[in-house]
Image 1: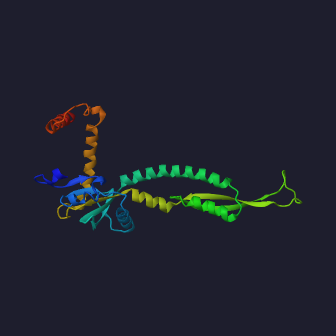
Image 2 (image 1 turned 60 degrees about the horizontal axis):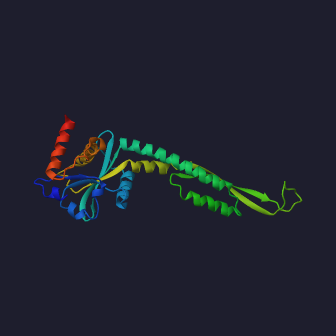
Length: 256
């Protein structure tokens, strides 16, 4: 960031969500930046919810839509864009399917233990099921039934003349997917929030989105250059100008 600020003609700094922190905010305020906002921020979650519940979407192309708003974040006036695409939705659906399968496997194991328990009162049976249902995120209780079991004091088959010793209660339940919760979760996972402090008169919303997409291409090239198969780590060069020269030669070799 210091190199960009001292450059003759700085334009914009494009980075991932790790750039946006409270510590870097004073430096970013002096630069023009485009960054993805961290999904862990409460404000980002609120902005996503507002965009998904509203009807202010704009079309970037046939597969990408976005919604923009202006706000103040870390003491800076910023423009945030909530972006959703068809490709991101397909990835979210694939991840949701895998997560749902793991969740159903875990729920089946838990229900086996709940069904096997025999408790002293019907209230205790309901409480055991409710405690389990509280941890479900994308499933909900469909039906439940409390089954009573009579216990006799002796061994063997009970007889009408033998006195009743106690009553036990067993819970049996069925679970179904919470479709509204699942769909809302997929919609949120298909969204990302981009932030910039560059005025819209200098960089439009579409240019902000395209600049963020271009970052993935640069990162892909960097991953290739730093891969073990490219043997960059085997070159012992310490001086900055020699490192730059090696990178230039290797980049030209890749292009050729």
